[in-house]
Image (cartoon, rainbow, N blue to C red; front, side, top):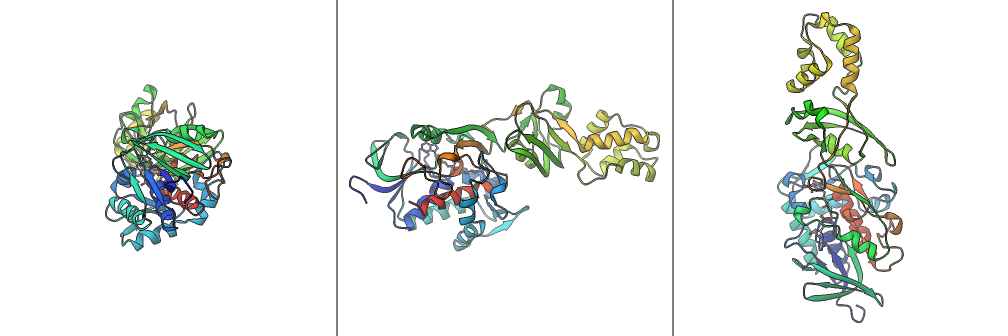
Length: 398
Ligand code: FDA
């Protein structure tokens, strides 16, 4: 330990990334202090995955993350993989299962993941200072001084792991960005991601379907991030659209853009005309009801003017209806904001960070990890895998 330092490393934030980084650094011999303003660690882990924590995704490769530098996450993700985290989970005897699409959840409770991280911290001799608001961070003579509560902690390394502002009602803040700016680092405009979208009055018919869910394919195109497409469930809400497919596409959505919904994925363009030949006496509602939930069928039939027997509807009308159902444009008026966002997109700009170590390029000893950084994963365990992997990258460098 250097003269004047009370610790080797101070980690700001006792969330997923901070606890992981502290545990690994501690087990490698560093004297680590974790400071958090919350009274308990890992609060977001506790509410994650519906209380079961979707702790990783088997498909966590860099192309499933959004960032101004699409390759930034590659290095850290390749050196700490879902298999590495799974090995840790199994070492702690935590039962798990794959739900769908490579998403791994605890069989029991997200509390097990927090307990595991705390046990790993204990094994590394990590000190936790909870309910400690950080008053000031100063840097000089190669040391970081962190004034928290009534005390000042001093260390040669400082890790920013205070996450992003999603769910401020849980104590989430933009502190990481303020600190990064203090050290001359740029911040990519933070915005809510994995968030429900809102619809305006002209699409009110769909808002009346609140509670209806359907498997769909959604598409949008972002000027910088490019095209995105997801096939999962969508849910109509009293404010607009939600469900996994919509949360996924929301990360790529920009104000003014449309989101195209395919209500009949996998169906050929002529499926309605084929159904007409096979069932000329059937009502369109019965035919659509084979593919879609009843209330949605009713709304679509009204919008598409489909009524009477199938045999009496022209092929042209049926083809137009099939095409519209396969490419229904919604024009969201906005998102439900940080209050309902699962994560924050944007954050500390990656161009000032080393992708190998997560260290600030111009400030030796300073690191940023987890959601605070401009790396945002898809829905489904990707964000925790980024937290673990970026924490690992920093811990082995400290
Ligand atoms: P995280 O937010 O976990 O931790 C930051 C810590 O810093 C907190 O303890 C906070 O109190 C502290 N802090 C903030 N400001 C501070 C300040 N000024 N001073 C001191 N401390 C401060 N992801 C996933 O992969 N699978 C999932 O199942 C889910 N589920 C999910 C559900 C819900 C409802 C939400 C809101 C989010 C998820 N996520 C998720 C996302 C996941 O929770 C998120 O990406 C990680 O928790 C990010 O980890 P970090 O450690 O970077 O931030």
